[in-house]
Amino acid sequence: MSFLERVDQTIRRSPVWRSIFRQPYPRDERSRAYAVMNNVFLHIHPVRVRQHAVKFAYTFCLGGLSFFLFLVLTVTGVYLMFFYVPSAAQAYDNILDIQSQVTFGLLTRNIHRWAAHLMVFFVFLHMMRVFYHGAYKPPREFNWVVGVVLLFLTIMLSFTGYLLPWDQIAYWAITIGTNMGGYAPLFNTPVSRILLGGVEVGQNTLLRFYVLHIMVLPLVAAIFLAVHFWRIRKDGGISGPL
Amino acid sequence: MTDTKAPPERREVLPVDPTRRTEIDKQRVPMSARPYRLLALVKQDAVVRVQKEPDDTVMTWPHLLTIEFLAAGVMSIFLLMMGLFINAPLEELANGNVTPAVAKAPWYFLGLQELLAYFHPTVAGVLVPAFVLVGAALIPYVDRGDVLAIRPSQRKTAVILFTMFCILGLALTFVGIFFRGPGYTFVIPYVTAPGMYFAL
Ligand code: HEM
Image 1 (cartoon, rainbow over the protein chains, first blue to last red):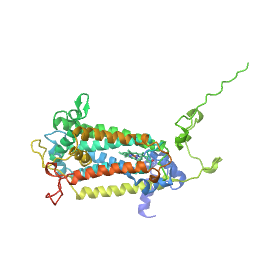
Image 2 (tube, rainbow over the protein chains, first blue to last red):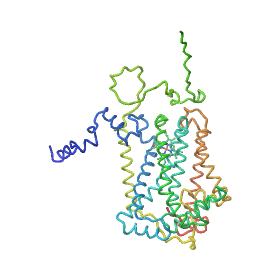
Image 3 (cartoon, each protein chain N blue to C red):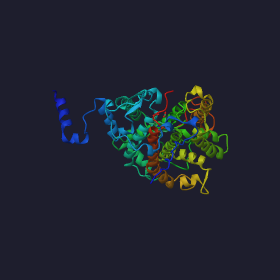
């Protein structure tokens, strides 16, 4: 037995390891079924899935990758939160510090930015794929509606995040964006007033967008994601085959 | 004493008219008639198989998990490369008094901003987005065609309408992204304008 194998064996036989994983690494069908069924992360999946559904060219992994991007955004976003204060006086300097002082700050910010754009794009593509497969038809009508809500939440997550760097791009993009939607009346006040917390983009806006971006929208999105995934299984798994 | 039991209340599987019943509806059994749930797996030979259904399934482990793992891996590498080689944009500090040459909304709203050039803000900013979202949510309830006709070739109208809609939206967005310059005038980047007016 080589040294590495011995280390591997020692770890796997240790009481700590065995307290975490009750079964040995699953190598046969039965134990693999148990592994999927008994693991909190894997049990989102059924033990068996239909053959066409695991083909890359059926889903193009678009829904799964949208979710993966959501997770990446959560992790990188939490890291950025340690160095960011939603104050009109500080936010921009915080971003500069993140880029130049913080360990892996620039990389984290870049990944957060690109993953966010990509997520909007992928969710849109996922919707197209679902449509062309007729997967919105019964019994999946309601999951399609949940999906539309998720699309809206994804866009709002991206939009609220866009303001946070508090630079010229952010300021004017949000000014234009909220001006556009500002004509919708809500509680007798234009939406823009409620969103902006004033007549123009300012400190109130920054705080509101921040709270929406890091707390409200991710929580609501997580709830709808849970319903979305639950419903996929309750609706009989992935649609098709075509 | 004769205790004649009332005939058991018949529990029908309610959903919809029979032509629109899906596999799920057929499987739907009243809870009273199915007082069990899946708790464990047993060896196939351990139970008598009443009816063997055609099996077109594969094991989640390894088949589905491998592809998920690969997809996540490829995406991670892609994001890492993007993050290492392309920096997220950052301009000067926000200043409400300095208007940029052209102020553009984030790219996914540029289709709407493009509409703003043609229509009243109430139309471009409120009615159209509301119509798009509500309309999209209503698709399954508007398309009442055969539930089994899922191939695009079997539902040409829906596919053509949806495709035209997407192309229209994409075209508007495209114009908004690339062909709008200072003061939101029409430009051709690098030809009638020195560069592109677009930040991601
Ligand atoms: C945050 C956004 C979303 C995430 C993370 C997500 C995730 C997923 C995942 C993982 C699946 C499994 C199959 C696949 O990967 O394609 C799925 C299926 C599905 N999604 Fe989404 N989704 C999102 C948004 C949407 C949107 C915008 C729609 C439609 C408007 C939608 C409608 C559906 C439907 C109907 C299914 C079932 C498809 C089938 O059975 O073939 N989802 N979603």
